[in-house]
Length: 138
Image (tube, rainbow, N blue to C red; front, side, top):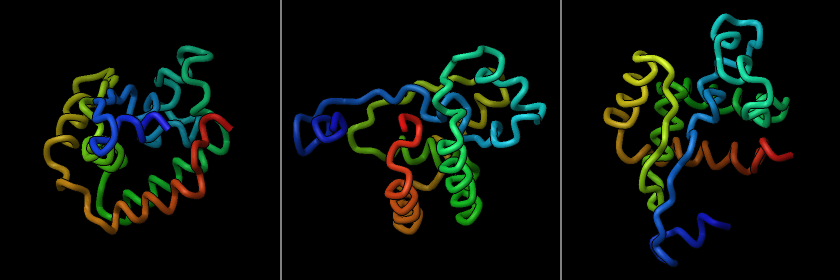
């Protein structure tokens, strides 16, 4: 509902995206909770931190987005940050890179991913969104 108010055709209020990668969940590193990347990740290092992204339904949705990114030749980061970047109400995104490599990947995703994301990619995102409207609050 907040997005509707923020949209340029309504009140034209800028929205700031906080953690557009869902604490790293949308990178896919938490799908295998025993992986080295998952064990080093904030969701495991700080119990309770963004725990909503560790729910099975959220992991299920993440897998669908990972498959979608691969289908279109994108990294999960390019898909998520490209989508956030292209929203007409989104004025900026707060990313939480924890390494120089992550920061470079995030910057590259914002600057090199096709603008806007192709219609086919957006349609596929919409299909997944319809199935998993907000998997982190269920």
